Length: 284
Image (tube, rainbow, N blue to C red):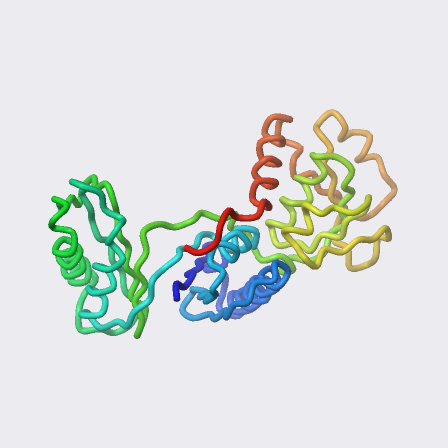
């Protein structure tokens, strides 16, 4: 069964106690997002990676793109860290992925203690791929290949894949406190979304927001400014700031899109909407 290997970036900069707390929150958010999309999966965490095993690969991939904190992920084939198994898996994975006359390269990395180096993995796996596709006239090109195969060896397992899907990154929702967001316009939606990306738990004021619920299945709604609220989020543009900043409230205000043009807001909103669309087909 293919396994999705998910990576984070910014979380890795935190101190060990904070990183562990953020990792646990990210794991919980992954499970919540998959459950909201009715996807059965096994989610495990080890060595700065998350591993998602499921029979609904496409649906899980679409869901993971909406989980803040994930920087990228790859759909991988898994084998043992034995060199012979790696070569066999790499050769089989390459079949159908190289066209007549294509050039290719293997980029390998490893974590843990093994009797070989990353260079050894690249060389041996590359040889296996070449032999498996020799009839197609393929060739090795380490400078500018048509196709790149990636191999990550992590302790007693190896993961073979051909690409990575870039995600939004940021911080897991719920790690940076709660904010109240006035959401009544497209710019407000984008502002609330940007605060979610920074790890804030957004409480929406202004009516149901199905789009934001796709990025936080546990999205909350409310009107009151409670003591736990760190600030109020608004999508106000620069000309509107003066009237908004004249207030008797002691609660800070955040304007995430204040430096963005209407065109930039529209472009980001389009991306936000596109990633909530259901995937086409199923399988890998």
